[in-house]
Amino acid sequence: MMNAIFFVAVTISLIIFQTIIFPSFSWFPQCFDLMIVNIIFLSLIYSHYGVILTIILIGCIMDSLSGVAFFLHIFSYLWIYLIVQLFKQFVFKRNFIFILSVSLVSILIQQGLILFSVFIEQGREGVGQMDILLMVKQLVWGGILIPPCVWLIAGFRQYWMYLLKIFKNQFAHRYRD
Image 1 (cartoon, one colour):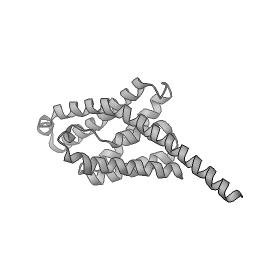
Image 2: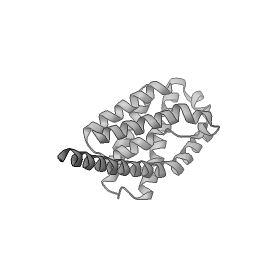
Image 3: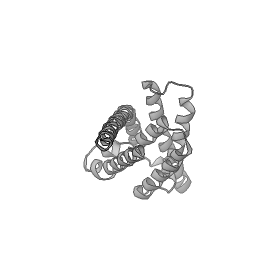
């Protein structure tokens, strides 16, 4: 239950940063989808079916807020989850190169789905009008920021678990006497 509270707080924080705080900065258009950090972290920590439902819920929220074609975030987040699950069986999951490569692949998945949806809706003309430089900038920002953000969330989670353990021990000690 307390892990769920932590992940809800992280998800809400990332949504607030992406939709409210970052748009006021001039470098926001170059920023990638911050929820990728959360999806990668959830994929590294958990492997059960409840995470898939959580990812679908997060994708629904982001699809509702973003204005892109519905199911784009759901589909990309599920692909990210599946790729991380597949690769973490073969690679040491705390390796920097693994986190970096999963981050870059995650952004490429999302950008590829955006290109595909534009191609389906507008044809070659729509794809030709897309800002490729923006996509490259998002890839660079993702490569720079996702690995440290994943480790930062991992550190916050460890601190959260430590605080919960302290509170649990204090609560047990107080009411044991």
